[in-house]
Amino acid sequence: MTSQHHRHWPKLILRLTSLYFFQRERSIDLVSLSYDASASTYDAAWTNHMRDCSDQMLSKLPIRQNARCLDLACGTGYVVGKLAQHQGCSVVGVDSSEGMLMVARQNNPEGCLFVHDDILQYLRRLPSESVDVVTCAWGLGYSQPSKVLHEISRVLKPGGRIGVIDNSILSLREMYLSAFQVLAEQPDALTHVLQIRFLLDHHSLRWRMRMKGLHVLESWGGSKRYAARTGAEAIARMKATGAAAGFEHSFNPRLYKQGEERFMEVLNGRYGDAIPIVHRYLAAVAVKP
Image: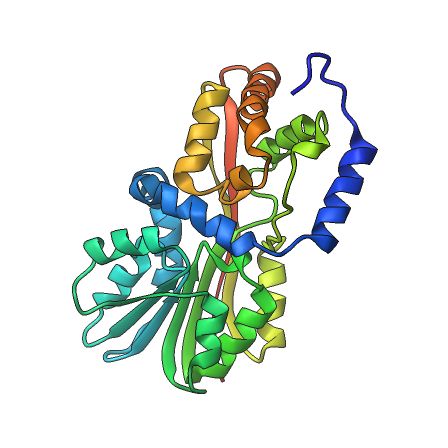
């Protein structure tokens, strides 16, 4: 971003603070824009890579016949499709990205219903004790976890189950530390601070579930690693998976390309031909007493 690459950490901190408290909140809209753009690449880049993790969560979530199921932040509908395989189950998938929902409708049978909506607002409109199973795979941190879990607890029937798997706030930390280094070289390039609320670990998720009156059956965490050979490949993968959702729309468009090139340079210099892309995740399943 600058020929000398001087870093202005105090100025960056001031910029982050000012935007966080005084900006017009647009995080969910910016995240949805990114997922709209990555919808066609998402399954190949993300779903297939993390499929075993999603399946592990689902395997710990027993589902009765004819259950009414709800999948929040459903994306391209992988979890919806797995839920629909259970005999007699009706499944609704909710997501704020219309692009992802278009792919979900193509991937799943006509009996599955997909709704374009904010997951928290959708939950708030549901009657209490009206759903048997709620899942949320890879999207809880884009909303407000405590409020979402409160609404899930409210809408679940007694004996109803919930399964959550999500990125940890420490996911991709190697990439984001490098990104902040670049941003410190020109803090004014930042135009929006995303209010993302990923949790620290599965203990944090477990505690929040308990606070909402849910009985946690099991919680766990883990990670999956991928090594990119170049900075360009690393950035392309982050865009394809949605891992950088919203971030490319949070910068001055005039400076974004220059900043992206500098980001590639930093990644190449720091990690060589083995740039670590580490997805750290947390998960839990619980029942409403």
